[in-house]
Image (cartoon, rainbow, N blue to C red; front, side, top):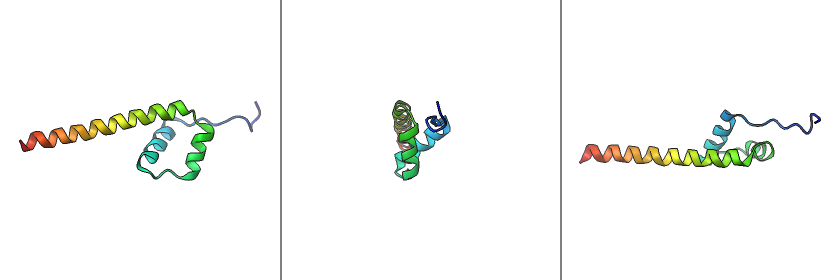
Length: 71
């Protein structure tokens, strides 16, 4: 493969950063384009599901804690 065809794959930190930025709506156009050009879609889909699950679990835990202390 030539240097032009070699794509730099995003690392774990880059994937997490991209998913968090996209989740709150502050993903830059440059980073979004890099993700689509160099990234594996399956990695971003799985990271999105994991991030969504962690967000829901965190909210449910906070709500459960607040309700148990008020009752």
